[in-house]
Length: 88
Image (cartoon, rainbow, N blue to C red):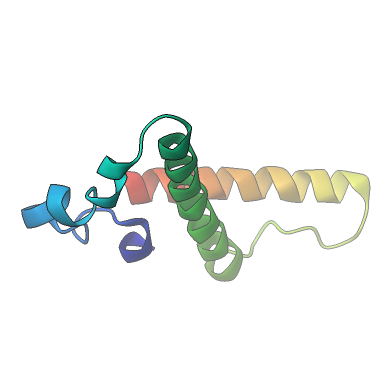
């Protein structure tokens, strides 16, 4: 998860500006915003895959509205915790 999200210690601290942010210097305005949103969505997707595969508890056991809502709430809480722990 840390490697895919580009977080410390896997973010190439010695040459971060040259290697990671280099392609982003060619963009500005809406193009830069789309790239930043894409990178954020990639981080959330990686964290959600991590949560789904390695922390499956709290998933809905039956297909009722209350069970699905409760499972979604548990999933988003686990996703938030995984994302916060990965970003710290």
